[in-house]
Image 1 (tube, rainbow, N blue to C red):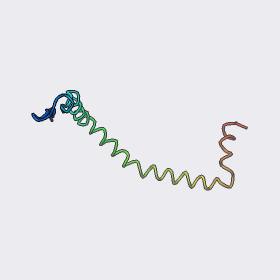
Image 2: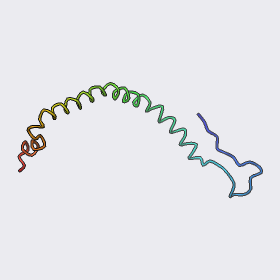
Image 3: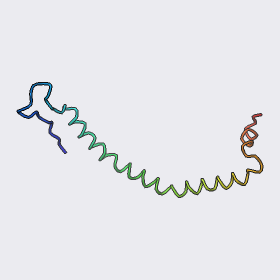
Image 4: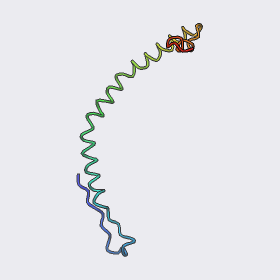
Length: 87
């Protein structure tokens, strides 16, 4: 994919109205395209991993909520300091 820099039209005035894309902009588009082509398989694999692990994450959160609800009569917010030995 090659992008040609913009050239000023003949009826454009002097320096203040000239529209020319800097060469770095053209190079950036090409390097961005190559970077996206290279990163696409990694992004696709990461999205598949997230989609596959989402049900497990939801089940883990639900299990933690259930466990926390069962501990509530025993003041679970006090267990942390008791377990690590803080007073």
